[in-house]
Image 1 (cartoon, rainbow, N blue to C red):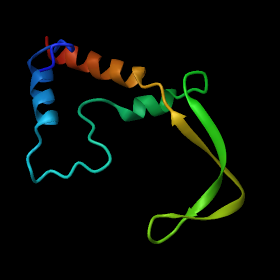
Image 2 (image 1 turned 45 degrees about the vertical axis):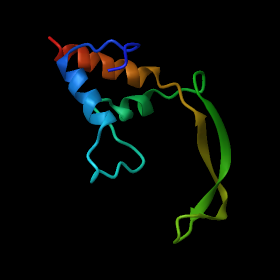
Image 3 (image 1 turned 135 degrees about the horizontal axis):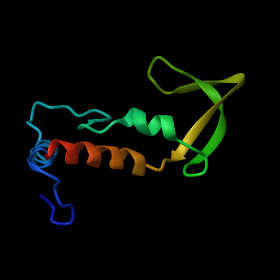
Length: 99
């Protein structure tokens, strides 16, 4: 394990080894949650700690590209997100598992 990040126990070490050395048959795709809670972060997003921009909504085409704008419908796009809450939640869970 990276010496900059002290593991809070054997479970954290095991998890880190699995994360950094997945088998060849694993296709990670866009996300690979490892005991953290992405939904915790989503419930705590605030404009004070994240950068947002309101944009016109767009349709998603069959080839998954953005299509035409949807008149009168806006979406909030988060350009940066403060992830400290998610990391703190993960570390707290790892510390609990170490006892």
